[in-house]
Length: 326
Ligand SMILES: NC(=O)c1ccc[n+]([C@@H]2O[C@H](COP(=O)([O-])OP(=O)(O)OC[C@H]3O[C@@H](n4cnc5c(N)ncnc54)[C@H](O)[C@@H]3O)[C@@H](O)[C@H]2O)c1
Image 1 (cartoon, rainbow, N blue to C red):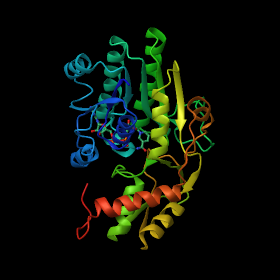
Image 2 (image 1 turned 90 degrees about the vertical axis):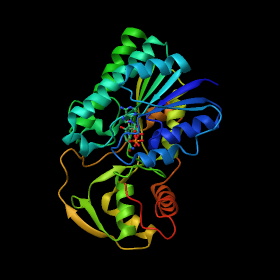
Image 3 (image 1 turned 120 degrees about the vertical axis):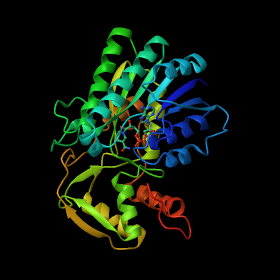
Image 4 (image 1 turned 60 degrees about the horizontal axis):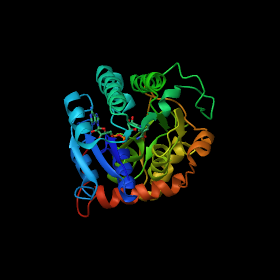
């Protein structure tokens, strides 16, 4: 048993990761600033079942607040870090590049610096498939060139991978960047397609389809991603970059049809041009994750979306209520 710091631990991926770590007996310190990119109440709801669990500590604070970080490390001395805190939306980054630079790059630098100063054994970082840019050639492999990010979000995440390499080179820091491929599941972010589509079909409001429906994504179910994160935090691998995807692409138009089936209603689909910064397709080569982490995603998109829609029906659309806002 050891103490693990989960930054962004009240978010979608961070809260599921925390739960898995607590379940197996780790102590977890969650650091989150409950920013309002989406409703902070949702984040409070994410961690409500964790509050009071043995081994769980919540620290409300910003990864860029060096005094807060210092106090946290002094008090809890985390041996390992799962760093998920970030500004995460691709489209929002185009309007707010400075915010993304500040939180994602500066904030990650501050976390790396604490890891160096407090001899942290291992850092696992939430990177992204967006780093691969608008390439058509699939599957995406970790040693593909990634010099053409098409959003500030992607560029800042790549900058973090590079900064971390420097910390590995200079200070011997163990660092694994996990490039997540569109993660979905219960408690999923309300700015992402699984949530937006489900919400639109439930409410009978416009479902915005960007492009002609032929774009495709590799969607990864949250439990599979958490399995990969937990495996990565248990292995000090030097410096590694590892894809965590499902390795199966889903066409946008098939995705919409699946949501219609699961909700039991037709969608009011309105076509819009592809937003700049979005990529046409993603698909992960997961052989490195299989080899280094024993990663083995189990959840088909159909099964995962059925669980997501069940969660949405029971938690978001509470009986007798309208859908909750963001
Ligand atoms: N969800 C996905 O499909 C996906 C895909 C690729 C990468 N990622 C990455 O995974 C990570 C988690 O994503 P998520 O979907 O759970 O997002 P999320 O927004 O639900 O979680 C991020 C959390 O970080 C917190 N946070 C933001 N700025 C902070 C700061 N300055 N200090 C402390 N806490 C801060 C937020 O309050 C939030 O709770 C992010 O780094 C994201 O870029 C997510």
